[in-house]
Amino acid sequence: MPISTDVTLGTGVRVIHADLVNLFGCSVGDDSVIGPFVEIQRGSHIGRKCKIQSHSFICEGVTIDDEVFIGHGVMFTNDRWPRAADHDGRLKTSDDWSMERTHVAKGAAIGSGATILPGVRIGLRALVAAGAVVTKDVPDFAMALGSPARVVADIRDVEPGMERFW
Image (tube, rainbow, N blue to C red):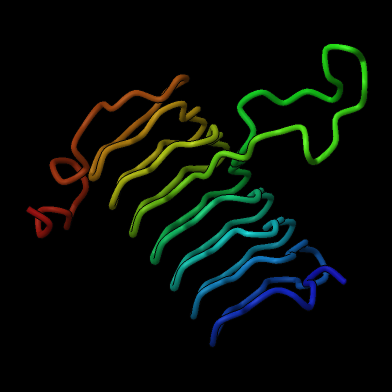
């Protein structure tokens, strides 16, 4: 079943092509939209009025606040030191790693193809450009781009309508 019985879906949630998603152990807030080929793992939370575009991966430990846009093919990660086997060649198990949580604040937007490394916070109304690799926190209202992502502007100075947040 692509949407597990342990998923909590808020009122008015739209899952585009429900047979083409993989949602388990997560929650999705009211009026959010989940595109096809999206995976949202156990322990993740999606807020209200979010848009999660196709082919995105939201792993365990990710919290996405209300009104967040996640572009196509955005990848979240939660393990800073991923390995298949330990130093002795023993296959690692679920007990052999340390999950790091990631938080995306209200109204943020993450462009298509971005990769979000573990343990970061993307700030209030921040904008992460398409293809960026986020390795550290992105401040509130910041525009970040590149690999590694770096802050290049205050979004309130460049995006029409954002001056109301001053």
